[in-house]
Amino acid sequence: MGTPIYLDYHATTPVDPRVLEAMLPYFTERFGNPASKGHAFGWRAQEAVEAARGHVASLISASSKEIVFTSGATESNNLAIKGVACALKGQGDHVITVVTEHKSVLDSCARLEREGWKVTRLPVEPDGFVNLDVLRASLTDGTVLVSVMAANNEIGVLQPLADIAAIVHERGALLHTDAAQAFGKVPIDVAASGVDLLSLTAHKCYGPKGTGALYLRRQRPRLPIECQIDGGGHEGGLRSGTLNVPGIVGLGACAEIAKRTLPEESVRLAGLRDRLLEGLRAGLDGIRVNGSLERRLPHNLHVSFDGIEGEALLMALGDIAVSTGSACSSGSGAPSHVLQGIGAVADRAGASIRFGLGRWTTDADIDAALERVVTVVRSLRERHPVA
Image 1: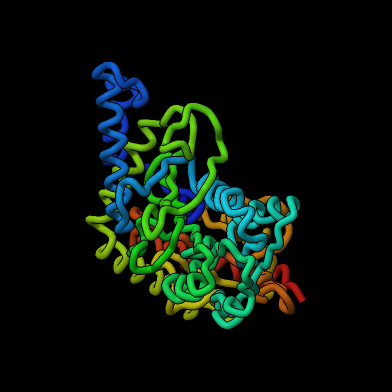
Image 2: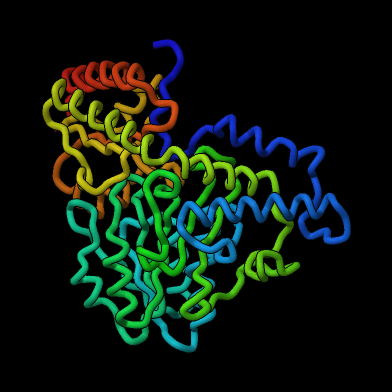
C-alpha cells in the first residue's frame, strides 16, 4: 500500500500547517512571558494569549473571561472535578459520573472517593447513552457535581447535554463535560447546552500537544472552584505556571479555523464515514456498529468483527493506523471499559476497531482501507477462527 494510512484521528491529529505558522514566531522573536508587564515583549505575548482566548471562547459561544488555559483535557478534567469538590466540600459529599467516561474523569472521581466522597457511576444503554431517568434518580441533596462527556472517545456517541443539564440544575448541582473529542468537530454552545464547566484540548483539533483549556461559567452566579496547581496565581489564580504561549496561540488558531470550516468538514467526514461502513457491510458479514449511528461524531466509526481476535487484526493491519480503543489507556490487554459498559464484549468473541477520520482523510484512503480490512478479516477468519 506504500505510505501508511492514518485513521486514528481520535488519538491525536497532525498539526495543521496554518496552526504551525501562527505558532512559530512565539518560539523565537516573540518569545516574551505574558507575566512580564513592564516591556513590549511581555505585552505582545499577553496580546497573543488574549486573542487566542477569544478564538476559543467564540467557538463554544462563551466569554473570553470564562476560558482558563491548561496543559490539556486531562488537566482540565482534574481541575474541574477536584476544584469544584474542594470548593463545595461543606455543601455536599456526592459526585456522579458515567462508566464510559475518559480515565482522567474516572480516576479523578476515584481520588475523591478515597478522600471520603460518595461517587455514583451511571451505567449506559446499549447505544451508549445515559438513561435520563436513572440520572434523575441518582441525584441527591448532597450532589454537587455531575460529569458527563460530550462525545465518547471510543464509540463517538454524543450525549444530550442540554437535557442532562436541565435535570442536574433542578437539584442545584453543577454539570461538567469532557469535550476533548467534540471541540472543533461538532457545534458547541455552552449557554444553550447549560454546561457549567467544559474541558477541551488542542491536539485533537489539529493543534499542538500539551495545551488545553477549561471553560468555567462566570455568571448566574460565579462558579465556585479551587485551584489545583499553586504558584504565581496565573490564569485568574486557577492555574499557576508560566503560560505556554506558542501552544496557546496554536489552540486559538485551531479554534479560529474550526469555526470557519466546521459545517462543511462535518458533512464531508460523515460522508466518508458512511462510505466506509457501507463498504464493510458489503464485503463482510458478522460486523456490528458500537454506539448510536444517529447521534455520534461525524468522523467516528467503531465496529466489531465476529470470529477474530483484536490483537491479531491490529497486527495484520499494520499499514493502517487504527485503534482498538482509547490511546490514553492502551496496552493494558484488558477489554475496553467503554465496550464493557455497552455490553459489547459479553458473549461473543471478536475484534473491535475504532476508525477515526480527519482533515486529510481522502476517498482514496477509505477505498484502500476498505480493501485491506475486508481482505484481512476474511483471511483471519479462515486461518485463525475464534470459537
